Image (cartoon, rainbow, N blue to C red; front, side, top):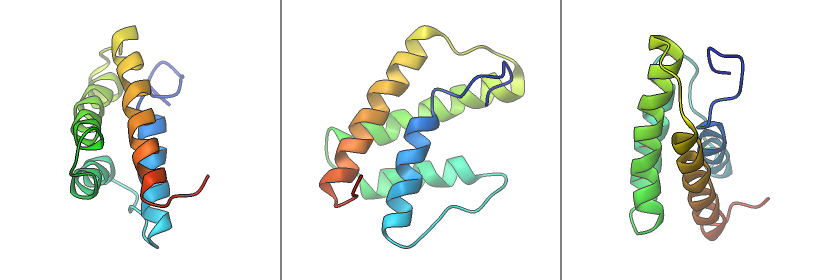
Length: 101
């Protein structure tokens, strides 16, 4: 949840990364650095377009989320739309790698 009480636009991206980790028998730890570590994982796994760009975009969205959550800077409609696009690309790439729905 963001500081405004709504779900973060990065949630679907994060959930896709968590599901991919779980498919390989791993999970991210809780606490500081969790989202950053997940971003590094996504960049390592998805090294070909279009998922490679989506993994980089996740990191940019993650930083915007941090500004929303910790610096009280709102996330606009454009960032929300971008997060949806990134989540779809990551999800499709995860399905290609064998993640089942």
